[in-house]
Amino acid sequence: MKALVYYRSVCRYLLVKGLNRFWPRTFFARVAPLKLQEIDFRPPGPAWVVLRPRLCGICGSDLRLLKGAESLLLEPYASLPAVLGHEVVAEVVEAPPGSEWGAGDRVAVEPVLPCAVRGAPPCRYCAAGAYNLCENFLGGELAPGVILGFTRGVGGGMAEMMAAHTSRLVRVPDNVPDEVAVLTDSLASALQPVLDNFPEDRHTVVIFGAGIIGQHLIRLLRVLGSLARVVMVARHRFQAELALEGGANVVMSSPSRTMLGEAVGARLAPTTLGGGNLEGGADLFFDCVGSKSSMQEGLLTLRGRGTFVLVGTAGALGPVDFSSLWFRELRLTGSAMYAHGLCQGKTVRTYEKAVELLAQGDYPSQGLVSHLFRLADYRRAFQVAFDKRRHQSLKVALDLR
Image 1 (cartoon, one colour):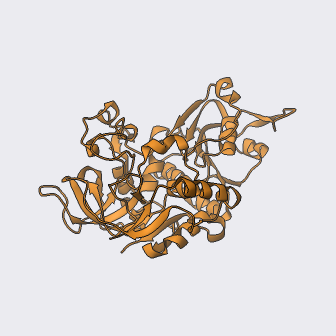
Image 2 (cartoon, helix red, strand yellow; image 1 turned 120 degrees about the vertical axis):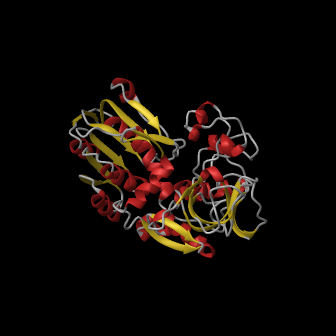
Image 3 (cartoon, one colour; image 1 turned 45 degrees about the vertical axis):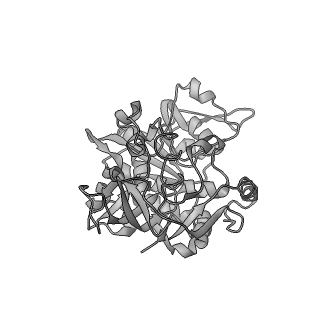
C-alpha cells in the first residue's frame, strides 16, 4: 500500500531546521526526510481493527517535525520510520471477532498509545483515567511513541490502510460529514484545557493565537455556556473574522503590550529598560502559539493568581522574564493531548465528548477545514499548511476517499 513515511536522517533534519529559520513558511519537500512509498501493512496485534482512512488532518506537530522545530528532548517519545498522520476519520475494513466494530463503521481514531494499547499493566496515570500522561510510552509491546503517526510499526492516517486498537475508536454518527469529523482531534486538543480550566462568567480570558486550536477554544467556551469576556489575538485577518464569528468579544492583530493590557483592564507600569510591565489584567491566558513572545506577554497580562495554560506545542523558547510568575503567584500549566475531564458536572472521555459536540449540530464548524488534497498531492498540502497568510489555511487535510 502507499503511505507517507517520515524516516530518520539527522543531516536532512538539520538542513530543514536551518532553512526554515530563513524561510519559515516554505516546505522544503526535496530536503525533508519524507517519502510517499509502498510499504507492507499488518496490524500490530489481534486486538487491532483494520481501517481505511477517509480524511486525515495535518496537525501543527506534523508541521513542526517537518520544520525541524520539535523539542530535541522529546526524541525518545517517537520512533522512526513512521507513517505520518494522527487526525483520522476512517472506515472499518476488518475487526476482531466479538468486538463492537463491523465492516463499514465510520470512526474517529484517538491516537494516544497508553498502557491498554501496549499490553502493559495500567500505570498510576492510566489507572486514574489520565492516560495522556502514561508512564509506559517507552515500553510494552510497541515501539516507543506517544501517538499514532510518530511511532514505528503502528502506522498512521496518511496511508491507504492503517490499524487502531479497539479501545481507541469512537463511532462517528451518520449526521456528521467526514469534513466535520476530521476536526475531532483538534477539537479534543482544545476541549481538554477548557475542561481543566473552565473560566467563571466574571473572568477575562485571553486566547493568544487564532489557528485551529484557538478557533476551537473560543467556540468551546461559548458552546459550553461560558459568558466570560474573551480577548483573542490573531495574526491574520481571516483568522480574526473567524474568531469574531466564533464568539470572541475583542480580536486584536499583533497588539502592543499597552494595547493588550488595555483590552484586559490592565495599566502599563513603565520601566526604564524592558518595554514596561502590566498591573492587573486577565484571569486566564491560553497560549496557543508556544513562542517566546506569547509566553512573555501571557505572564505579564495575567492578574495576581491568574492561570497561564500552554496549549501550543513548545520546545526551547529563548530568554523569558519569569518575575511575574513569583511576584503575582501565577499558576503555569500545560495541556497535552486529551484523556478525561469534568464537563458540566460529569466526567467524560474527552475524545467522545468532542464527537458528541460535533454531532449536536450547533457547533460552528463552518470554515474551519479550509483545504483538502489527495495523498499524492501531499507536497502541495504541506506547503499550503505552512503558509497560512498566503493561502488563508486553517485545517488542511488529506482526502483518501
